[in-house]
Image (cartoon, rainbow, N blue to C red; front, side, top):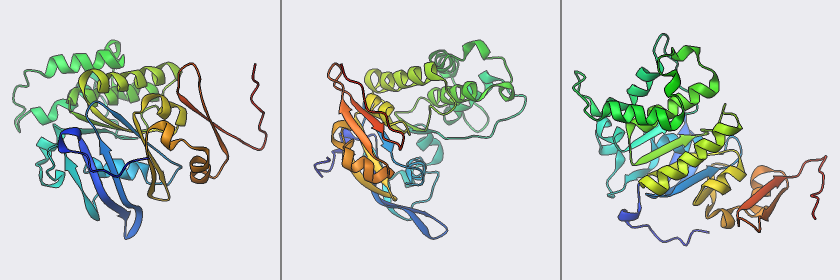
Length: 278
């Protein structure tokens, strides 16, 4: 588990300190701490209603903070930064976004360049290259001229991700990004997440429901249960049978793949079939 030491500012992309968050007076996240480090992927996991999305939205300044604070990599408060400047540092792929009618995929991906354009849409010299790159890595280039309201859920999810990548921020927040994606694009998205961290030094915070995906992609895992951080550490440290079983209210087996060293989890239902071993 976490050793309790405060990270140095140079090791931080974004940090939430003692965050208390709620809705209409009801507290849903209690004094949560989370650190997103450059070049690392932090997965936030936990059952429905544990506060995962609320925590991520607070880090993106889209949910008010009742107490505590969100700090940038230089140790300054995110709350004091102008919106345009904050948008050059942090972007969020939310679970859902309004779908505009009659707008092409290329135009929607171009929305990600808004922090770099002036009030009167001044020239953005890096824009075309960043838009093209974002569409390429998300596999949506072939549909660039299609109206976005004609896309499937999986296609739309990839377009929204491309929009975030076009924003070109050092901190990327992803809220259940594999939703609506088929198996191929789930794998490719998680590969992309690792590439962004490993090759480009991006600090990635991602909410995931699939514990095995979290174990595969994350350097660090934050386990939420009942609005509280129950554990923080590597997948091996956090994915412990007793902790997961308590958090999810169902028996969860945890094993380690001897060939890869990755943690693997398996929920045990009433019609459980035992593992077959060679």
